[in-house]
Image (cartoon, rainbow, N blue to C red; front, side, top):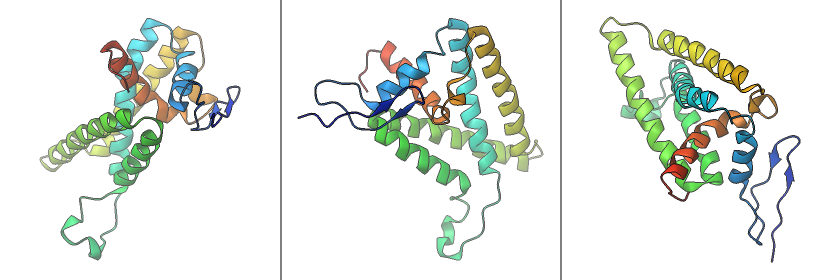
Length: 184
């Protein structure tokens, strides 16, 4: 009994259904499409540096957006912010694609959150503002990404489908697990 798989690779649209006869999962199809524009080893190395920095910086930029005081949160005010919603949305999306990769990504995001809190503390002690640090990191990393794709000679995947902005981080985790021979 095959549940069928809907794929439109020209536009990068993939349903989450899999073929009961051993077809690829949606995440595998996304990874294959993403890999098409990430074959050059220099581009891949640049991505291993820049993608985590872009994710970190975006998380920090969104974290920097003032969040309203909500009385019902009580002592949890300050714990929740706009980045909390970004984390929840991305982990839910990843969970639908691959539970193992979503759990690992959650741990990565917790680590990034800890680093962002440290940057906030540094700011309180006289350091630069979190948003400024994250904006600089974002700009440098984004330029790095485009340099990588210039070297690769292919346009970034997200120009075809914005979903690939979310696929990039777990694609890197997938490569690490693949090298370690760990199934995801």
